[in-house]
Length: 269
Image 1: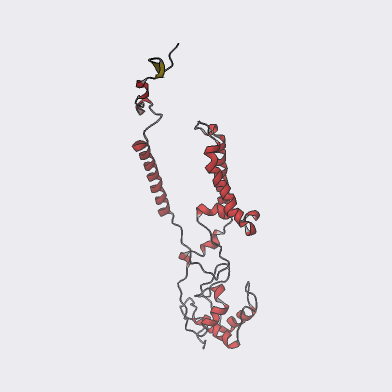
Image 2: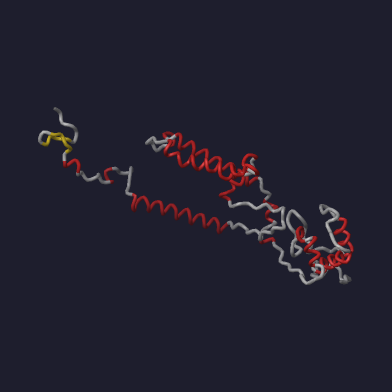
């Protein structure tokens, strides 16, 4: 009877040779360029690559800072907030008919759940030993679909934004101007005009212009408040004639012309 590989007769039985069972694993040096110890060799390389990427990213952020936007204003219905860049693909997904409104659960839970669930199952669906992408078609295909879909949705979300209009909400474009809240016309302004022209007459992008450099006399302001002008429709003011006069005086006395004075020197309260 032939002996098996790594086996030898011990008495009248065939058992594995003790020397074979206690063989020390081969050293990594026997496989040059093919494998290495996880600690510290491989982990150290990972840390170095991560550190280089982090430093480069911080340098890029410092060189191209993004302007902060103004504080959120619930009175401004024209402002459309945007999520951070890594959630833009999900933001764009919610614009589709069957992923928004009454189907919002599908867009927020259903589709993302299926996508991430498929990525989690990919290693179990493709158990081939090969490491090349061509040898792992299922896992590679699912990953490519996920990456391409994310890139496409993010791109569609970015190009749909009017960045010039959003720039008006930048903190750098904020006009530092405080109005006299003790003026008798302030409450009238707050009830009739603040939602479109801002709390400090600075205007609201997409709703109404600022009133800071308004050279119009009180009579013209009263006429505009009642009859409207441009995109401002008539009938926006709701109040008495006395309140209308208080409103006009408040706007004139709290605006700033090029010479830093009010819009009309002869205005009387």
